[in-house]
Length: 209
Image (cartoon, rainbow, N blue to C red; front, side):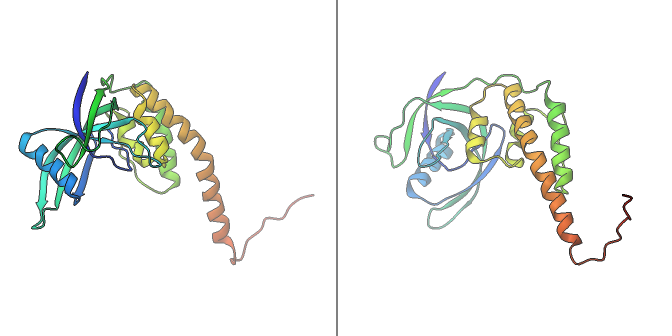
């Protein structure tokens, strides 16, 4: 399905279901958000990475106008609805200050995957090493989207995750990432422990040769 969206490119990745707070100050985006509020329209955040629009983004809904400043700036709350792929990009749209374009909405598929328990186990391991608490469960809907910002992905990796269409693919992607990261974090923890021992008296066990 294709539709036309006003577009607000940002150097970040937003996932469906994610809440995003924005401080809107540029005149073009103040116009965009005002029109979304007045006409109850959605807008799109296409990913802007390395000074390029690689093509995928997230359709957003403005949930709350949190604050409007005297000079026209705004603080808004928004939520990700679904993923889209850019068909064309026009900057600016005729008669507007902001950009827009035709997008293809990517249908959402299953929200759960048989890999969720394996993903949770790896999350628990890395959070334990980092001495952080986790409250995710294998029954969490769209688990991959919920944890993607919490596992140390680069923006390029976060974007790659956005382009994957099934929850199973996304969870396998995160599992592979955590498989790569866990040994590194474990080594860092061992290094920290070694460093903390420096300068302390050590009680060494005698060795039998």
